[in-house]
Image (cartoon, rainbow over all chains, first blue to last red):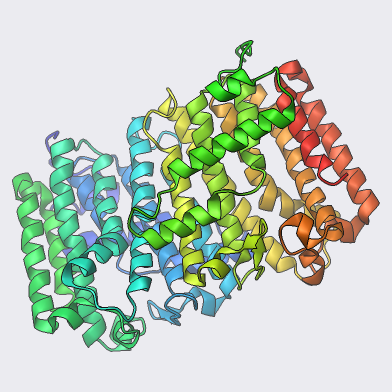
Length: 314
Length: 314
C-alpha cells in the first residue's frame, strides 16, 4: 500500500480536523458532511414526483450515527482514498441501509412504527410510498457509484458497484433478512445465528470498509486484512444490537425496544444471556483490532470505530 | 457508426438465424436464450437462502414476451454490439422489470393475484418474500452489469450502470409508479398521462435500447436517434396496454383484466376512447420508424419490434 500521507486528503473540513482531533470531533465532522452530501444526492420536492422525493429525504436525512459512512471514510483515510469518491461511496452505502430500514419496518415485515425516534415511513406517509421509497433509494445508490469520473480508474469504480450490489442482494443483506424471517419461532444454534447476521448486517459493514479501501491504494493483502476487521466489527455490531434491544428502553433506542424477544426471534442474548453476549462482543473487538494492527497508527480511526461499536452497550 | 456486419455477431444460435429468418424465429431464439441466461444469472435453491432464491426464479423465469431483452438485442445488433454484454444487459433490464412487477402486484399496491397466468409472488409465497424478491432482483441487475470485463471499456460499462439506475429510480420507473398511485381517482389530461407513462414504462424501454447500443459502436447521434425511437415505442407500448386492458379477457391477458378501470385510474382509453387510442399507437409507431429510417436495413429488427408492440392490439 502507498504510505499514508501526514495529512489525510479526505476532505478540507475533515483534513483540518484530521489526525489531531479526537474521535468524537472526527465522527461529528463526517456526520455533518454526510448530511450535506445526502441532501445533495437525494432529489428534493422541487423535482417531480415531489411526494416521493420528500419521502426519500425523510427516510435518509437526519438519521442515525452513520456508522457505515464512518467506516467508509476511515478505510479511505487509511488507504489515501480519493475524497469525493469516499463521500459518494458513503452516501451509496447509507442509502442502501436507509432503504433496508424502510422496507424492514413495513407492516408485512417487522411492522414497526418508530425509527430513530420518528414515525416510520409507512406511518408518516403510506405503505405504497414506503415501498417505492425503498426501491428508489436502492437505484439511487447505484446511480451515485456509477457517476462518471468518480475514480481515476473506471475498472475500480465497477468493482465498487459489484461490491455494493453483491452486499445488498440475495447472498448479502436481503438474503440475511430472508433467513431472519424464516427463523421466527425456530431454534437456531450459534453458528446459524452467525450465518444470518453475516448476511443481514455484516455484508453491508464489510462493503463499507471495502468501498473505502477501493477509493484508495489498497492492495489484495490490505483488502483481506480489512475484510477480517470488518467481519468482526459487523458481527460485534449485531451482538450489541441484541444486547441493546434486550436492555434498553424505547426512549433511549429511538425505536420500539424488545421487539425481537416479543417476535420470538433468536438473538445472541436469548442464546447466550446478557453477560456472555457482551463478552462475545468484546472478543470480536479484540479480533478486529488484531486484524488491523499491521497498519499501525494509520488505522487508528478504524480502531476507534471498533471501540465505538462495542461501547454503545457498556 | 461502424458498418453493420453481414452476419450479426450477437450469438452463435442467433447468428445462424440472423438476417435470414423472420421476426418470429428471431424473437423466439432470443426468448429461449434469455431463459437460459436468466436461469444462470439467478441463483438456484441449492444456494442459501434457498427459499428466497426459489422465489426469485419463480418471479423471473418462464415469463412474458421479453420485449425489453428483444430491444436490447435489436439495438446491439444494429450497433455491432458485444454479444455477451448484450445478453447480460438484457438480463439486467429484465430483472428490473421482473422486480417491479413483483412489487406492483403486492397488496399495498395493485393487490393483484395473477401475473402471466400464474399466482403472483406474494400469493405463491408470502408478502415478506415478495418484498425481498423484488429488492434482491434489483441488486442482482446491477451486479450483472458490473461484472468484470463485460465490455472492453470499463467506462462504457459504468455508463450502462448509470443508465439502468437512473431509468429504475425516482425519476424513472419508481417515480412513474408514484405518479400513477397519486393519480387514482384524479382527472389527468393527456400531457400528464404521458409524463406518468414516460417514467413508469418508458424509462425502462428507453434504457433497453440504450444499453443495447452501448454494447456496441453507437455514437452520440446514433444514441439520440435510437432514443427518439425508444420514446415512441415506449409510449405506444403503454397505449396498447391500456387498449388491451380495456378489451381483453383475463384469460387472454394472463393477468386480471379491467383492473385499471376498476381502480378508477386514468388511461388512454378512458381519455380518448378505444379507436383514438389505437390511432395514437399507430401514429407513435410511424414516428418510431421515421426515427430509425436513417439506419436503413440495419435497423430492421427494431422496426419489426415497433410493429410487434402495436400489433398486440390489432
